[in-house]
Image 1: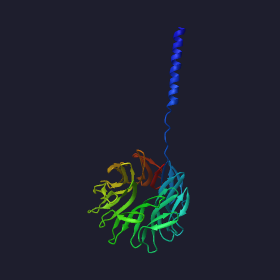
Image 2: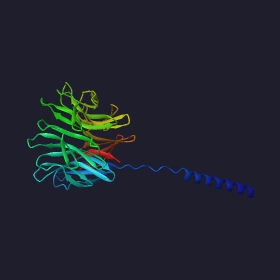
Image 3: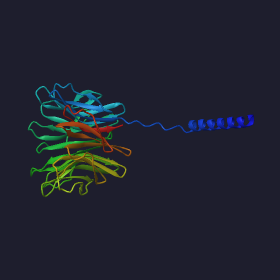
Length: 347
């Protein structure tokens, strides 16, 4: 009996020892936690309040005494950059950006201006938007470290909607220009040199730009011969790739490229007349709502195999700010106030 007991005891001890060594030698991997940032507004007590959210927690950028909206967000290191506008004392929108909550004005408040997109490389913050001149003409504008550049000539309207910029001084912008026939043309600029993408006899708009290697991708929408808007994107100088078939109006807002995959976000109306938020991966559409409510998909961020989309869905008459991760929605506002998200960033 003693011999059997000793053998059993030795066996149990050996198993426990091997189990312990196995756990120490092959520790379970530590999950990587991602921070999800989004920006937009919430309508509070009769005013639009510019805000950003980090992992669902709201940070107010303005105090609610004047209307303000945040359009885009970028995180570099521990610094959070947000751009948008705030009304001044006489009711004129002033383009500005916030770095860690501290505001910097980009325009002087004499004419309407809005900052629509921001991109940070190193210590350089590149911002794109619009600034109206003294004649009331909208000019697509780029701001960088105290300098200001117009991408349009000021005689015909032009808007800058998205930007990528680098410390070497190279920058890429997407937007649209009015031509002499009064049509808007989807346009991109490289260091201020423009190239149009849409048919000059039809209205076209560009809202998003992405760069992968030497390739430039521009997202937007264009009017067809029947007057319907087609969501689409253009690669370099190529012919636009249609994402919708023209049965209903469709709009592409932002674009991202990861490896060989191209992601576009936007909206398309359905047969019930609802504006349905969706994304396209390599030209295949994925609807991210049930189609019974109006919604928008306004920005996209890709992290590995995960797709993050910022936007809004109308519920019981109120816009609810939402983030969709791989198609699953998380509400950032309660629905008691109107709200919307225009930018998303994952770090």
